[in-house]
Image (cartoon, rainbow, N blue to C red; front, side, top):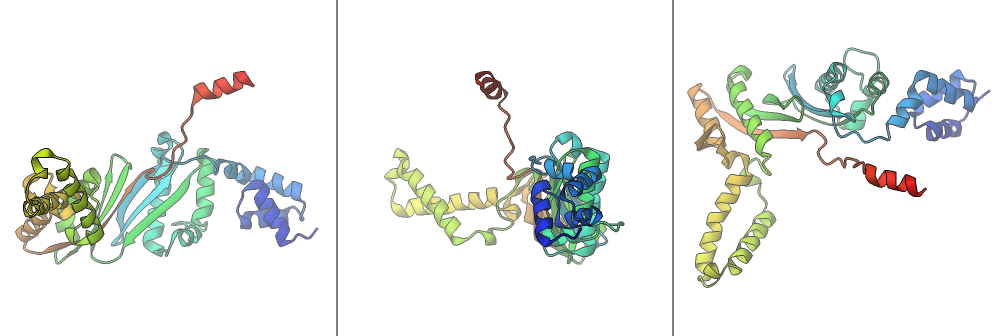
Length: 305
């Protein structure tokens, strides 16, 4: 029995399974919708689709340098337990290796890439992992650097992944330690900006406005001349830079140095130069709204029912 594009669409809506798998199921079932659903259930794909609706806010943030390409990825699962599962960790590393090799333009392009070392796409490999592990698993985001020297750092077994990119005349091995130090600072303090030059005028104006308002509400400061208050604001802005901009922050390992001065002195000691270019920090589950289970309310509603 023949089937149409509308049949494929209907099967997809019924099961939540991808278009290509629905098409295969209908072809294998001679266009019979019920048999196609059964086919997908037998393959485990319909079950994985049901899991796809569950919130995945755990998992792993991972960073690595693969064949000179710096990569950071986040792959989510439903529980912290799965985030430590060896098969899950291997899958995450495989996703990172695929990003390094294929350098996809966006997430859709990545999901269509062949998963490293296989003939399956990342989407198909992800579905396979859902079936093997029994939880919703989702590749969420990635970033990579192809130029300069990248240094990767993974904090707390995958809670945070940081990728630092440096411009240098030194070797990757020589800058490894200073790159890790910068990455650890980024992981710990999560600065809003890398350098004070990135702070936009509207951010500065807003900070000035807040500081002036605070002084106006402080009896000791309110009566001071405007020029004096302006000077105080400028001093406070320097503090804003030192708190919010990585390169102007105190270096956590040596408070006498800023991160910028630490990198410069460490590079000089090795007979070279290092310029911090960019970084990416992924924190596992960042921005994902986790479902809060209210068991008392759930039981109360069941009793009322």
